[in-house]
Length: 171
Image 1: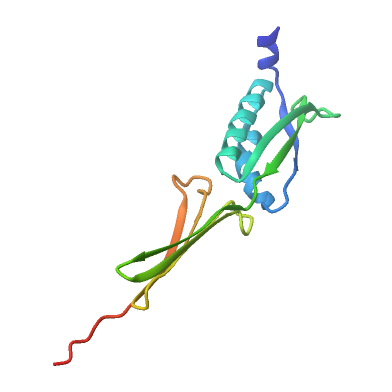
Image 2 (image 1 turned 135 degrees about the horizontal axis):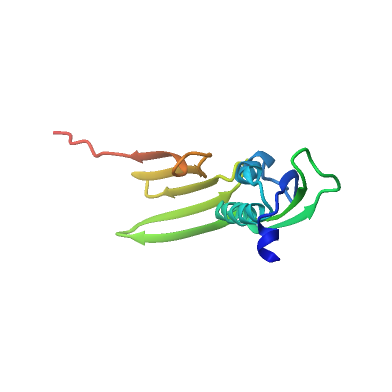
């Protein structure tokens, strides 16, 4: 009986996404595309598992759950299902730290802030500042985002500003 249900024809009619506050819905829809290819009840279940794993791997959700429900009407190809995706977003600030040190009579400090999903594309932004002694300071800003469909890895960009004063030999 369970085997018959697994192979029963069924397609996805509608997907409802709940719980988004900062994340753009297109980011979530990108991960749900696999659901549109399912043609049986078992394939819908497998696609839900795959999509849930993909959503959690973005690193911006504390929870990602899916509910599959029978659609009130059959479609042109037979029975259809509606899927309700419920998401709980993580806090945006991932970490913030500061530190002060002295070495050789010169003091320095460092600050680091990491923020996720700042503009809603599931990106991560890191800012590191090391304003050191008057002769040397470093500021580094880096941003990464998850891969788009078909891309093998996440994309990143960075900027590093360094101020260094060299001693001039007068002679």
